[in-house]
Length: 310
Image (cartoon, rainbow, N blue to C red; front, top):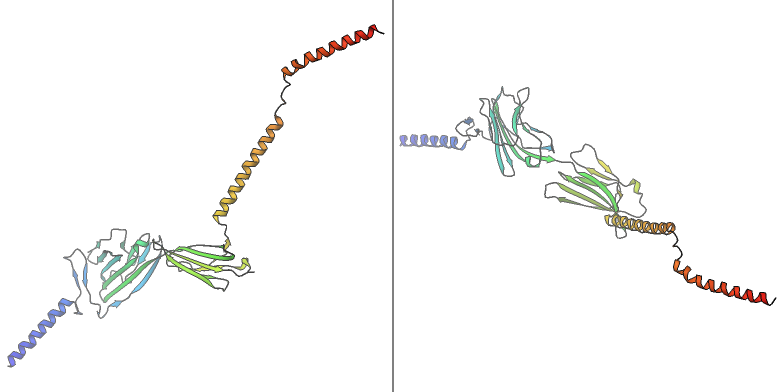
């Protein structure tokens, strides 16, 4: 009976040890596999000296982005792994102190070192396609550091403001377009305003705020304030008078037609002034000459008869 109890205890201990090794919860295990093309680690999240740090990082459009997993140098490091998930597209960049390096991203991302020997990940020309979750795991001699970094883009919006008419009401409009994340708009006049935010297909935001103006408001004092994380200061914009493009086309067309009609009138009048008078017709002279000769002959006969009687 006593032997049977001893055998059962030994079997339970063996099963417990085997389960601990398979599930990776043995706190004394840290394994680097060199048989796989990926540098793979088995570091339990409950490691005694481990630090878990979820955080967010934001980078301006077009800038070179730098991500650090830890501030340890390679004199203390064992390995660092970056596992990147960009909207379902996954890749990995890793490096170890025995020169087991790997990069499957093939898009310019690379692990580099500072002059002090600290490792960091560089993302050249940050753009929207680089947004995603960057999981980093750094193991050093005294413990480990694990972080899930939510990396996103910051893009400043273009801002404009103008005045327009809605029927008999004058409305001030303030527009912040192409920003990421969406901008915030407020007015100097503490009146009721409406704002709409639209997410464009390219992932950037359009924010429009409309303010119905009361009668008698001083337009020179009206401003809209735009706030965005990419700016250190608030952008203040004064609305300008908006002229509809239809009115511009009508005005330009009217001026063009008047210019053409005026040119035609001037040209016709000028031609009439410089045109020479038409010469007298020779046929008319020839028709008159017989009548003049007849009158002259009659006069001669009449004069001769008068002389005879005197």
